Length: 194
Image 1: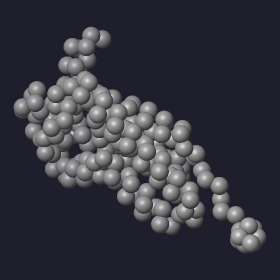
Image 2 (image 1 turned 180 degrees about the horizontal axis):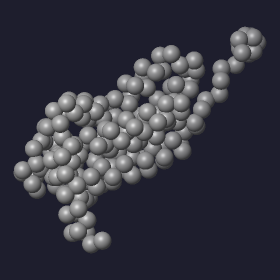
Image 3 (image 1 turned 30 degrees about the horizontal axis):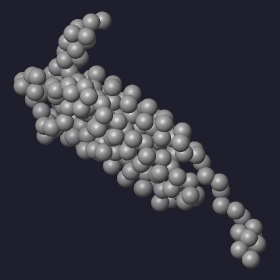
Image 4 (image 1 turned 90 degrees about the horizontal axis):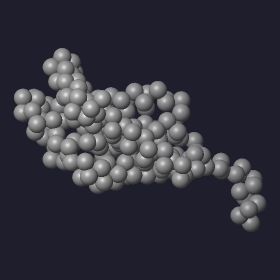
């Protein structure tokens, strides 16, 4: 498919989402999801809340390190390398008729930083808390979709961000162990301390 046709399809998909799926009841939900995705802070807050009751503090700290590393790498790649390199204007700059429900971001559009951090966070959380894996991926998709719903990104921006976030998290988690060794039994710990 030629690039012009792909970009036209992308703009049409955004127009359909904004024109057909927006609803006053969904607006605050999407604004909340987008706010939670800001620099991945929502993921860090969720991880911290779950870690309070984690039986293995060392494993929880390692999981937090993997999460922060994944998010930081996603920000670095997307905001400081890809966005300035590609320099795609935001949708509302090319089509002022798109009504914004969110403040107008000043950065470039492709790829979506929120989507990158949403998918990087979902990946890292799925490793840390595998029983809740479907919830993490659902939350990641919802955060990414919120950016199209709010009119600040095209669908391709979100797709590009998702790929960048998955790559960043895959790289970051490959550099760190998935688990930490369990604490030694108390008797063994006392013997080692002597």
